[in-house]
Length: 208
Image 1 (cartoon, rainbow, N blue to C red):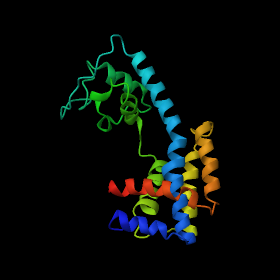
Image 2 (cartoon, helix red, strand yellow):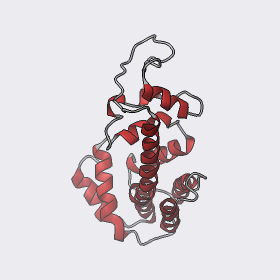
Image 3 (cartoon, rainbow, N blue to C red):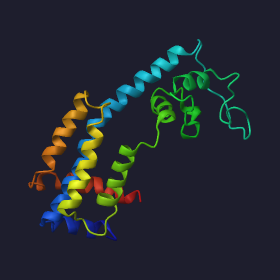
């Protein structure tokens, strides 16, 4: 695929079961999974963010720490003066937040602050990595828009495992997404969401 035109032509000619498998996975990844996880992520990050701010002694000012190579015990924050860093470190299970993953200049921003704080606690979890790898190797970066039945089965099982994680087991939106993904795995009527998947695919390949 070298152009939008050739990509569009490929979609017009979609007829085979393998191409239908690719479309089903595309909808599961780009629409169903995203919509199912977004409410949970938004709710959890905002709740935690508000708890952190409530723990910091008033008035809550911005973190002004800068990276200082060799500073002990923390190169990213002055642990003697920074309330933000001390509170966040206390919340972390191993007291080792991933400081390098977060921009402290954005912590006070009510729109992006919750996510920037959450990034401190994001490990390289295998389930998340597996979903990302599935997106890249079985949907977004393929020479042909096709998946075999075995590849489709493996890809959908990866999404199912993420949504079956105990943390998400009681979340209504996540479990609704799981039910829809289970239905998508068995559907053959892919034409009703072909245009939607094409739109998301164009966005994905433009980001390569």
